[in-house]
Image (cartoon, rainbow, N blue to C red; front, side):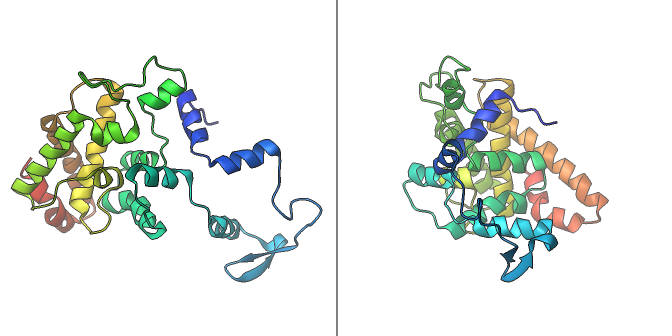
Length: 256
């Protein structure tokens, strides 16, 4: 049995497109649901009898029927004030799996992208906390997803410190934009930097969860990153893949 906290449940509800909710509330049904029984379905261009339908066939029917732009994509387009192609969103949603193997980090990124990650504004709307404002000292801004992970002044200092360190020790890169932090750098391949950005968001989430209002410091993040890279080193060593570690991760580890 799966148990959901109230804030998780409400976050999931808020991610459901409004017209889907309307269908449920109005009890309207799609074609063929009443009085018109179908004996076969088209799957990947082939007509398959219902009696022979397999789980993977049902999977492809669902995937191919998803033509509507999801609510999270619409919202991100509004926030960034730019229309992002659907093909780019495929890259964005695949990025955490390409740069990282840690399931908790992948899960966090998907929660951010789907806009179901908890923040003060959402908790305030659920009437679980008295204020939607950021917990950081001297910050009176409303705490939203993009504020928590990028716009807060203390967080911007954190990302600037990360990029300055990266430029000094790894390679010269441009400053990070809000899209780079929220989505990852998806237009060019940069696995190590995307991994560090993703772990940066994990670190921010960890501090907010354990010590709300505590300053997010890059020095503390370096220790966090060092521990993760040592774990990655041990894993790749057990798989006889140390060449990958030396190529991608050793330059970062030796400069932490």
